[in-house]
Image (tube, rainbow, N blue to C red; front, top):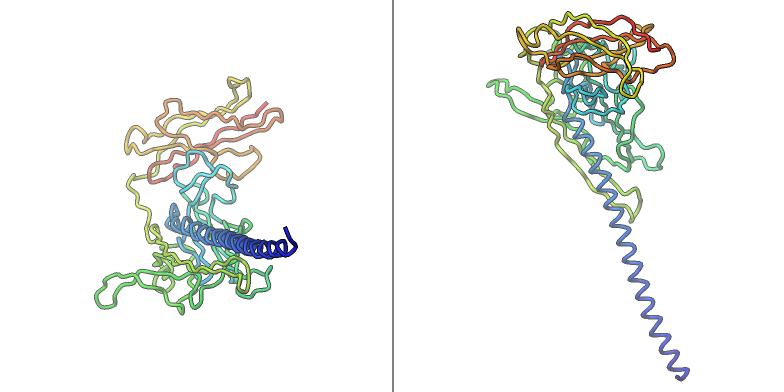
Length: 381
């Protein structure tokens, strides 16, 4: 091979190699852009799905006196719902999560108020009862807040908060869609002349709305003050980005209309009166099959389980330390119709001489709870 042939071969090889490198770079860049788009779409889709899943439960399981929608603004929505429970057998909540903290499965009290986002207003104004004890409907907040960790002035983070717990990030790299609010609301209105109901969008001038009356459906919870109670749907709109800037930035506008099927409903009582539960509650200790010390709680069936209205469905059990005055959340729910009418508590701690009290209430299909019947203190040896 001559020197000229070698030079020609090297030149040809250089062109081929340069083309191959350019093709590889193009494919690598395309693969990276595809991955960024997928991650961006997943981020936006997750945010939309999370908000829809929660918003659809607004008002579910809330007692009539507890507001269903608390606050509605273009960047904030706050509502009440019996979203989840950590009590096995509790059928009133939408979801069961055994790892949910006790402070996230019950209604806020005046002693644990939260400040509504972007306002100076504290909520709640009163305590809400769920029959016996505190209401089981917690307060859920979604709000968009400027992302201070970036240099952009149009970048937001979507936050979710349950009661007064620490907020959790749902999505970042969120922009406001031009000329579109994050949240738009639709409510039922009656035609002034015909009285026919129709759905229409709430004007921006009507926002924000707040349930300013502490008691929902009270005699003074009417007119303009009750306007927030007429909301039946929320449209969520935002633009998601891949977090880059300049020519590398990719954007996708997302929007979804979420219907609120529980809004405007009231609890109907088809089961009749409060359960009649007069049984004595006994608590003692026994050893189980593994020779562990456990507590045994026994009672007799409610009067109206097999007679009268025959509407008792379950028995709710509470447990507390004997020196405590607060029963807290229910400990467990036991289905009715069991001839034994007992509960074996394997969660007691032996070896410390702890003393426990137990309380039991009958619950019907309303669901209404009877008055609590309590046991004497039982000492765990």
